[in-house]
Image 1 (cartoon, protein in one colour):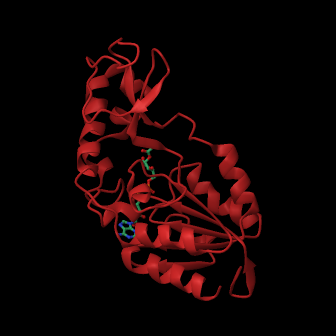
Image 2 (tube, protein in one colour):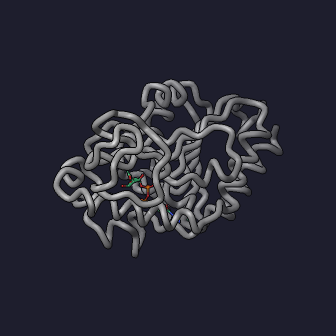
Image 3 (cartoon, helix red, strand yellow):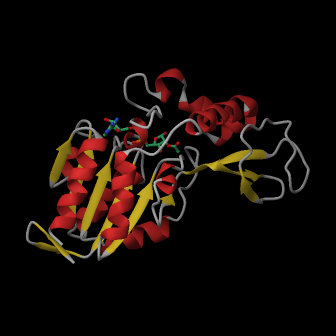
Length: 240
Ligand code: OAD
């Protein structure tokens, strides 16, 4: 077990957002030039958008999937993965990201609370399957053969993020909560730091700039994820 500024740390929750994948070449949502500058999230990331403009929504995620296939994990994904395997206590990784860069960096566990670009599901037969590289509203479901019902397994605004019960238990028990590369504006993830604080966890933020909820953190490491994340986790391991 490790001590972190005099507190014994046995259980850690790490939350990542788009900033962790930015240096792999994936565009974030709310930075200048971010995805939500070029697209209105209401036209893309809601159940109504899917119902009314299915092909526009599917094309947006087809493009994200194709961008993802050109990217590699960066030093921050690798540092998190190394830390998960090297730390003697319990580490629980939650990501808001729908990319698979944590997995490709070798992370032994990752919970995708907003879903995954690599999974699609059929709203007719309710089965989940590996996502085809590109799919349209006319693409038939490979399992039930009906078309018009495939969607990426992404949590849209207005839908409930995945495995919230498990997340809440992990946060309740955490001694240290580390938030990396997220703007802190999308709930419920933006509420995790407050929850962790209420349960007396030490809260640390690693971000390119102070987030919207910076006041909730005991420590802020401002800088690029590829620099700050490896530095931070080596320090925690060194204190072990
Ligand atoms: P945002 O785009 O809102 O925020 C990204 C954060 O990362 C910002 O605070 C940046 O300052 C920071 N950042 C950018 N580059 C960085 C770098 N190289 N190193 C460190 N920090 C960096 O992305 P999220 O907070 O992840 O939801 O967005 C949350 C959710 O909103 C997403 O999961 C997505 C979106 O709508 C769904 O798709 C359901």
